[in-house]
Length: 103
Image 1 (cartoon, rainbow, N blue to C red):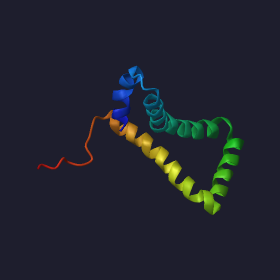
Image 2 (cartoon, one colour):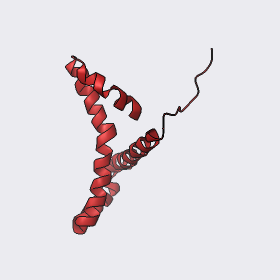
Image 3 (cartoon, rainbow, N blue to C red):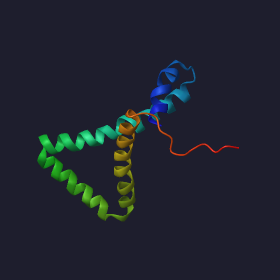
Image 4 (cartoon, rainbow, N blue to C red):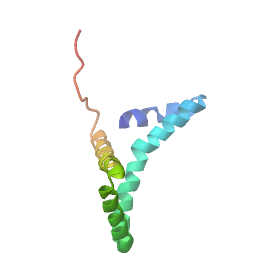
């Protein structure tokens, strides 16, 4: 998916269909850029603002206690790190998750 976004971004920027362009750019942001904000935010906050980091960590723990937000947090945070790992895998080259069936 990373290669798809990077490969088609220049083509999409030339498309006249504004709705498609908006959706593609939103998906590009959510899958490529947004995960880095979480990772960099955690690291920089822990280094430069340790008190704020502890407050945010406490808030995270509270959200894990509340049943309504527990599932959201348990899904969102790992997904962000999986997207980052996918970007590193994509740097090593294109790979297929499954082989194409012959008919």
